[in-house]
Length: 101
Ligand SMILES: [Zn+2]
Image 1: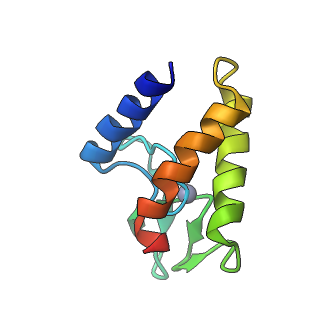
Image 2: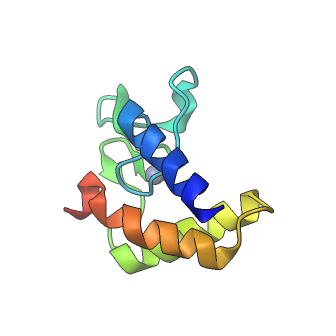
Image 3: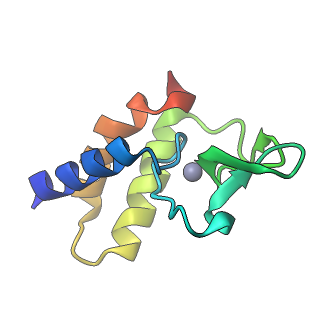
């Protein structure tokens, strides 16, 4: 189970359509899932929850807080994913995202 989820994440990563802050998958077709630059144009690196009008919506969040928040949201939206598994995967993947380098 856990391995399948990790693999899904890796496949998403290859497509490059996931937020570089929280790791959320962003559908290319739906612009509202993407963040926006200061001039209002689409920012393809970050999702609308993390990045709006050229700035992070929560600039002071730590990587650890992001890992926990992401794991919680993921587990809540996927009844088949336990918080523990989500936390483990997030802990492995979030640190690799551009925002946290
Ligand atoms: Zn995000």
